[in-house]
Length: 436
Ligand code: DLL
Image (tube, rainbow, N blue to C red; front, side, top):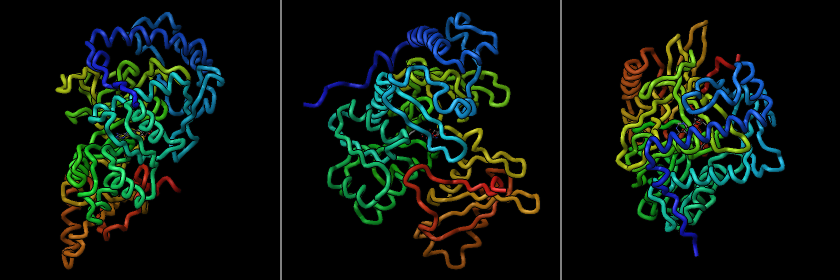
């Protein structure tokens, strides 16, 4: 008999603002004491700022704490920020980081449980119940995607398919044979699966009703495309290895931003240049303080993700603050000819013009001048209908990109399936300037 445990927790997820603040105040004070007493790296940072745990009496004092950055994590690699003896830890996960040292995060059993609980909330918010078959195509292993959604699915009591990424034929076969109802993977892989399912004419054989997609930026246009192709409702999910993994925030039926699990994480938005805390509704860098984690409890961690927070009433009844879809990363933002360019802006233009979300942005520096080229795949229909129209199509995109970005970007239309697909996070940007 499956567990009847129910991970939609209205007493927590729909608690009053006063109640949420009371939890945060109490947990923050305890967490700061825990971190100060057990992590010399933090104690030193706090001492350098002239503060002690006694100075932190509520969330109003949060701003007194120093920020922690990825650079600190790299400096303290591997054990420098560990707040529990290794013998109390049961799990390690690591970032998919392509540059610099990897970031390694540690979990006690308590930490794994709370992470599973956050992912379980995300699955319930996407309509999941123990009747569902949850198809997890995020990578398993050091990446947090697979293990996180797997743990959440178990908690809800769903039948869990630990597919991991790759082997698209097998993914689709299992989906049809076992009647998967909820798909969890990156949005780019969901789009790829949708494309394959259509090409094989298997739409009628899949039973999917929802998808939980995250780990990379995706636009509303991409959501519409996936929803239409798969006949599902597509929900966003956000998280980062440093703060536990997926499930830090998740979308509800309203699909207008992701509720942050505020009983576990305090969110702030800051000006990325000055560090000033910004009022609700202003766009800036997201900063998290984890108030319930034991082994790797980061205080005021700068995510580099740019977003907006809102406490507007949500029709789902949840009261936890909502974050917008990240609008880019302060460190992913490209500066081309002095202009800030976010890959998501380019994606919006392409999808608006009916192109698939298969593109690559190549930035180079030729004779001291930045150049940006966008390689865009055509749909098979565009491709077969492109005789003599290529220049016209390319010019149209050049103009639309100029209107969005304010600079000229060269456009190269390529045949369908030319751009390499990713089974995990898509590689959208190749910045050759960094290679010199
Ligand atoms: O990507 C955790 C995750 C797994 C989230 C599965 C959702 C689903 P990292 O590999 O450490 O962890 O990468 C974290 O990915 O700082 C964001 O820049 C980006 N990211 C994560 N979710 C989203 C999202 C996982 N929904 C980094 N939208 C974060 C946009 C996202 N970007």
